[in-house]
Image 1 (cartoon, one colour):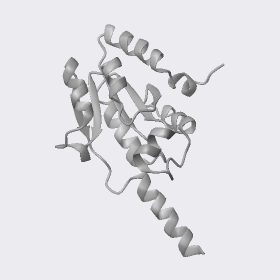
Image 2 (cartoon, helix red, strand yellow):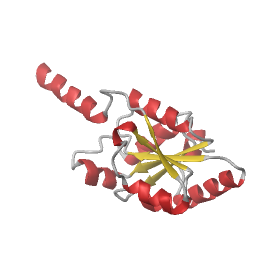
Image 3 (cartoon, rainbow, N blue to C red):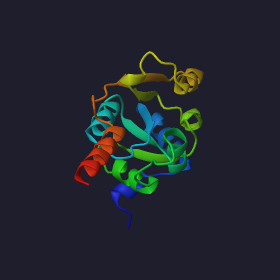
Image 4 (cartoon, rainbow, N blue to C red):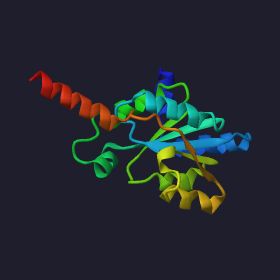
Length: 166
């Protein structure tokens, strides 16, 4: 028997089915995307705020290959399967779907979430997701980011600590 967390990690085909079902029931579907490499308080707060914008939150998780393309050869720290389990374990998240492109636009085009969430640090910047949602009448909304909370900051702190202790 699968755990609840395992049931939340789904294929693109399953995601299309679930979003169609939710919309048919009049629910607001919210999506966001990211690497979620080393989960921290900023991620949790971001996902809780995203979930508060609708009835269903889907997280489009960058694959390992996609993370390397975006962040370089030393990332991700945590493999995609493990990142998916951790993100799916959060109460605010309804579904996780792993994708390999540089942007989630292909999936957004297919499932057409009502709202696409980005961090407030993107406000005022043109992002590819804007073009996708414009086609079907969706919208991009922004949520707050927690200052100083980032995987990059955590990695840098670990490096400094290791250097100081050697």
